[in-house]
Length: 293
Image 1 (spheres, rainbow, N blue to C red):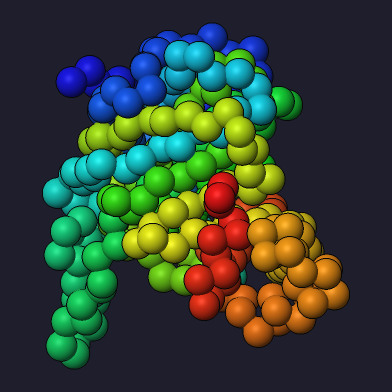
Image 2 (spheres, one colour):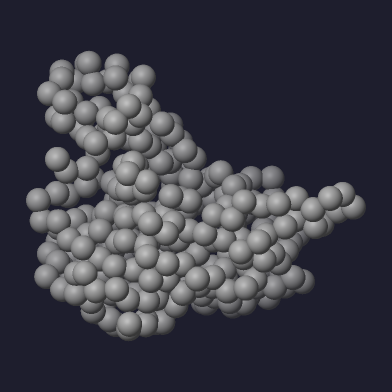
């Protein structure tokens, strides 16, 4: 199996691929943590080299992909480093303390042992925080949009497939920012950030162009919607769910809107980026409208 460990720090439509794969090929990416493997207990934010923060692997060209094609990225395995770190700093997340603060935790069996009481078990949720295809305009890896990016969804775990519409020929897959665990909304600005080895496999679909990153996990489809605030993100997501539900089930838009009001399933992804993000699905089997027939 081929392994890829090239790190990049900006996303650009003209960025030359450092690696190319065929659809159906299983390959590995070696990711660093969100600090660029610089963080540790006692390390302050000011101690970090900002040019090394938030690296992602990529871009990886996918043979035969043209702009407008859908690319599916199946997550086959996530093998984390033994230890990860969670941290915050002034201005990061909500309610951040006045000084930087870092804690180290086991990646596979995380326990909070920071007080005098019994240890608190943290539910392991290994997932990829950042996954996407090169955008048509330059962006930072921590940004997100229809091209993917910093989705910060625990749904991007082993067994999931993330479908994204390519904006440039070749797609230009990038991945990074792996978390061993993360609470809803990532309120302190990080999960348990960890370096990892990923095994991935890509596929393509030329007859479908999802408007939003679409995750299929446990036979359920979700879309990741973003907005300047949660109201905008929710409004965009409801509009998309209404549109696809009406088309898939052959119902008037007014009826589809009422149906969305009864079927919508919402999860908060993160509050730390300039654009907020939510994961939306539909219950009752209506999530079938979010993927091709």
